[in-house]
Length: 126
Ligand SMILES: [Fe+2]
Ligand SMILES: [Fe+2]
Image (cartoon, rainbow, N blue to C red; front, top):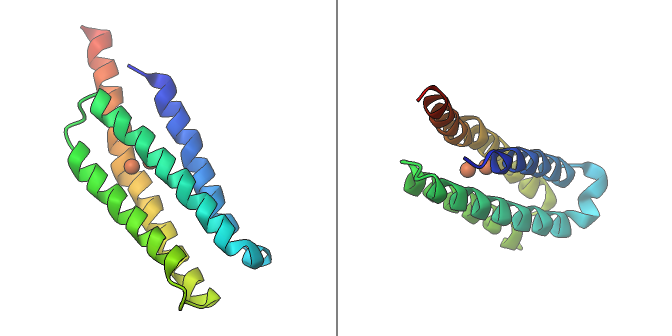
């Protein structure tokens, strides 16, 4: 089992959380578009890694998990591309997205980690 992949994912989660905070930092308003683009490419890469890992371990809820990723990507892309949104509206949407992403990490990503841990325990006791 690829334990380094899980650790790597955990580091990426921290980076995503940091990037989201940067996007909500009032002093960073000028750079919002580039910060959001940076966040988007980071999230894209992270989701790709995670999806590849789930397939590798035959995680049973992979398709469902990928659907959630796709929705999150769409939401972020909408925030980035909606030119009619003002900074306050974008900020509100980013805050909402932060909650959704954080819930996803706490529930769905944790479920993947739990699944891997259970396999490790079963293999250890076999
Ligand atoms: Fe995920
Ligand atoms: Fe994740």
